Image (tube, rainbow, N blue to C red; front, top):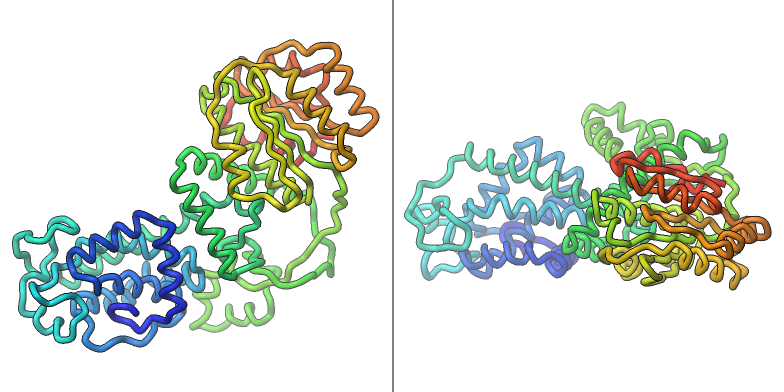
Length: 473
């Protein structure tokens, strides 16, 4: 139950689930409870419900006056309306936005009158006569000097700032998920295609975001992988054109050329046009799903990832792991198995993911490791040869080696790699990263490389797109 609105059990459950995965949100609620009592827990639940629902739930009687002022002034602001459009029916976005708004609005929450817990009937009458409704100096610290009640202009300014902060928080959260969205098969209303909006999917989205929030390095890797994937998607879109009449369903889209007739009608309606344009920009408009007949049928992806100490320099570690994650995304899209061999002076770990079976645990195990040690290129190459030879499903594999290392390949290694290329059609795609390591690595792996990509600046994402798209045959 909310403080000012009659929220449903479903909405309350959605908000509780957000609190379970977000320690900062829980701390904000506890800070408010220290001021207003246990009834304050309904205030952020009200914000969440109003963001999630297209229409406001019914108001409760005897709600605190300070809370109702905030709620009644919010609809006057364009920032609030745009935020609601962004969060409508989106449990993940509504939770993130409610937390961000609570953080900004908490300084406006007054201390409850002594002996009158928040939410008790008649409190609003007493509060109107007390100066304790003044804005306190710091959250969760009662006993501050009395201050005058904030004016409507002050509250509107705070609501504008809170709405903007919430919008930025939602955009940052969805951007951080871009790098893992497809490989984990997550579906959010902010993505181009919504395949699942059920509770299980929402739980998976929140768990993935919770993990990224607690691991800044992994979040940077995911964000960079998302940038790479967006560039790769734009490249695919320019190269693969869906055929006429290849409609296979309905999806959410930002392509005005594929909108359903009912959506197009909204553009002609004065009262619906703005809402329709917002959904179009956010890729949430309903349109026809089209599908090309690109032939895949290629083998798995084997990634040889250098984790020697030199890869920790100049951002090469984060960049190389982002490329590795982007390759997992490509493998997932193309229904291919993905096998990681991480190495330095020896092989340090292996992770295998079957087609479309990636989990958060797989990503953490694969990428959340530090770099150390020297470089031995022979061991991972021979291990890749053994893996491909030992399984029929590994035939015609794409092997991608990402390294800044310098080593001399033994003749037996070169011979084994060449034999696989001739008999199994295996490609060896080498990514040599670093202004110095690029040249030496090119010399080391040149004898087996099907393609060689030298990256001297990890900020240049265009150079690695052919590798991420597995276009190097």
